[in-house]
Amino acid sequence: LGVSPSAYEEACSGMGPENAATVIACILERGGHINSPGGYLRHLTRRTEKGEFAIGPMLMALARANGGVPRYAS
Image (tube, one colour):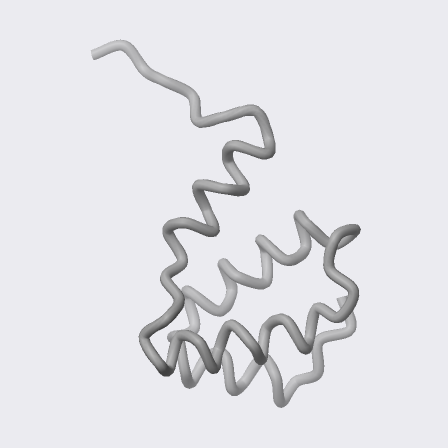
């Protein structure tokens, strides 16, 4: 992806290592639509620190783009 170690470290510090890894996976899935993955990660990290970004909507958008979320019978 070309994300610098410092951008990833900032993301881990700002949003937690699990969320940073999940965001990296989402960026990888949408790689063809993102011109600067490292810049985008830094942008999302800043938004997270301001309380303006939550990972849930990003995951739901990715699920919808990939054919939806499977439904299980209960």
